[in-house]
Length: 157
Image (cartoon, rainbow, N blue to C red):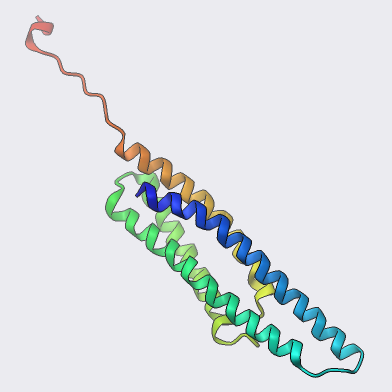
């Protein structure tokens, strides 16, 4: 489990950078579309590019979100600590909600653009980063050897 949560921490950083880049690309395409409309040379290219970039970004985000759902689901089986289980339940719930929200621009990019849900995904990544660290600590504590005191009958007498 330690490897899964270390991978979760690394993927949080990678996913955060990707989300920021995709949201910036869609945001700049949106302003390019507004400029085309304002100056009368509207060809519709920026709209379709924004449409494609939104769909591409949402489809890129789905595997990351699925990873967090699976990682926190496996915690129930392998880590017996209460803190890890509570964090995992909250993590699966948040990731499931974000999965549903991310499906909207993946299915209909014209309805919601990726720069509108980008800040929500960045907050999600910060939460998953923190939860991965907490569960990593819990996984390390789960495998730590416990000290037992063994007294023989000679010590008692």
